[in-house]
Image (cartoon, rainbow, N blue to C red; front, side, top):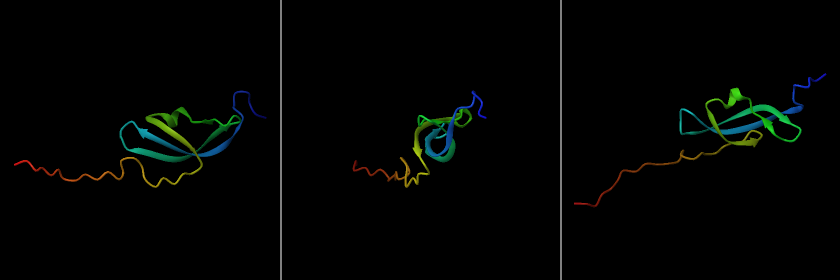
Length: 81
């Protein structure tokens, strides 16, 4: 029997895209969280700690590249004499 304090729902696999508080690099992880009957995924406060969540995606997402990964720095060429 389910307690009235426990939300009804199912376990949902999601990919969370986020920034960590200690880095400007976009990060992601695949997690399993409770999904309510209305479709909302409940992300525990313990997971949210030290993160700024950008997106919650359905299932395990294969991220090919992220913002900033392909930035190439080239030497500055000056024509000044």
